[in-house]
Amino acid sequence: MTQTTVIVGASRGIGLELVRQSAARGDRVIATVRRENAKAAPLEAGAALALVADVMEPASLNAIASMVDEPVDLLVCNAGVLNSYGGIEEAAHDRWAWLTVLMTNVAGPFFSARAFLPQLERSEAGKIAILSSGMGSNERAKGNAYPYRASKAGATNVARNLAVELSERGVSVGAYHPGWVRTDMGGGKADVPVEEAAAGLLARFDALGPDTSGVVEDYKGTPIPF
Image (tube, rainbow, N blue to C red; front, side, top):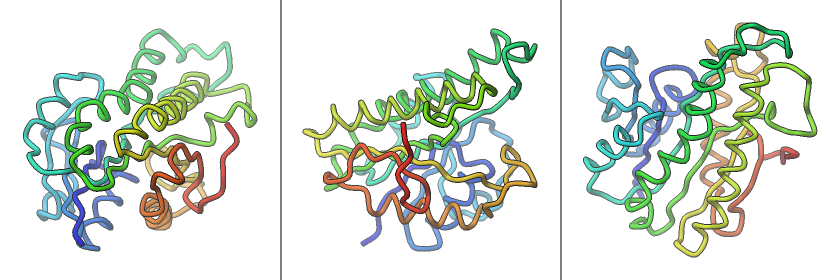
């Protein structure tokens, strides 16, 4: 049975590969990109309907959600940024870095979920997958990348709370660590090919349901301590 999947943040990296693999297996894919001129081969080839949305702007997400008049079976909240990495004295951890990272990585999934909630509730088994990170685990603190780590802890917290609130509304929610992936963000030294990460994530999204809602795990299904 064909499912409708919305992937928020799909112009490159993991999001783009999720579009490619979802479309290849027959899903109807609706993808969002932040800029009108975003270049993404699967999007240009017509594998997905591409819409422009800024996850920091609720009105932007609401506008594209209003264009979707069908049930949404899976919402993937993938949009994310990492713009500074050092410790407490890192000058790049400035007001703008904190604002951008927290708004994109924490508020973005919340705004996305709220925008598409009516369509998710119309699905027989609506699901929300929030791309978090093991870097947001309090038990794995390293004393660096403060804005990003805090944002991913926040994203996981949003996922866990949505799982509680939406359980009675028939929508399941999970938070997922994609691994250290070879993308623009992860860098060339990362140990997980983007194709492997995306395939593993799709398998985890398929396994998500009422009995597993609230899960925090990696792309292989290994639980992540929070």
